[in-house]
Amino acid sequence: MFGLELVFGSLTVSFLIGLFTIVLLYWYTTRNHDYWEKKNIPYVKPLPLIGSVWETMRKPLHEVEYERYMKLGPVYGHYEGNNAHISIGDPVLLKDIMVKDFSSFTGRRVRLFC
Image 1 (cartoon, helix red, strand yellow):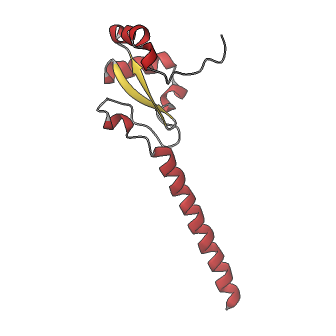
Image 2 (cartoon, rainbow, N blue to C red):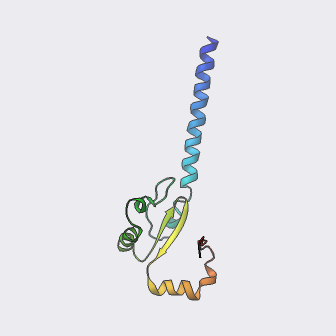
Image 3 (cartoon, rainbow, N blue to C red):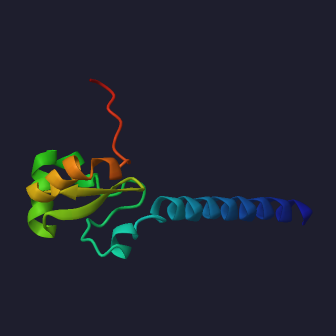
């Protein structure tokens, strides 16, 4: 009797720890996926863990960006993993950001090669 309780008790505990780990991982990878919705900016719906980069794994990046531009407009959000990114396709707005407001946008990507 004691041996059966020990086996089933450890299986139950292992199952609960595994389930808790999966739920925690899901929460951690999706906790920021409502960022663009809160800002009222159109965005690509993300998948848990990988964000919205799944399309770029199957098609060339320029085709994906063009399709998103036509579907969502010149300014839209997307996710790389859990990180929110914005894409801007309007030349006038892009010039304002890159020239006039350059110092206001500090969260740029780091260049690895010159």
